[in-house]
Image (cartoon, rainbow, N blue to C red):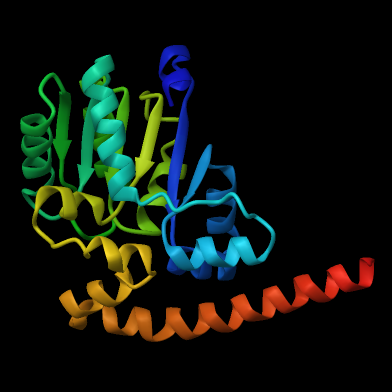
Length: 233
């Protein structure tokens, strides 16, 4: 990120959990969006565990919220300008104020909350122009997956900021509008259960599909991987 900002080279970063992986598996265009990202961070212990079972033993979890905390601290030290795009009405402004309060010297280039519906071409162009006019170094996109990933890929050649990062629920967690799971639940892969308990009406359908589907497909992939190793041996 620092190199991209120094060289004014444009990149975008995705934060990928089990749900994102399953959606991308069914959608080739979205799969390409994740594949073309400069970084696709493993946000979720199920992704980490499956990767380790497949031989990627050095992989570690990178929570979008924790990543945002780290980059915010770095930005306050190095003078990077941050723009916050997304969230429910008022969330981005609350987020910006809280981050400035906890990180003196942080430069907030601006905030913008788009309508929840699909944007028209004219509306999207206006948003791009507003972000560019603020001259940020980092644009945080909190539209939720996979909407934020599609937006970053679509506007990759239009947004002049060197770095775009899609972090979804991190806007709510850091703004304090939604609670974060305890650390022990994060480490043990149960953060999804905490979020389900916090927002059952909105999330029960997602997790009713994601959890069994990921377990089944993950087990199948591990079995295939081990059979392939046996054949090569």
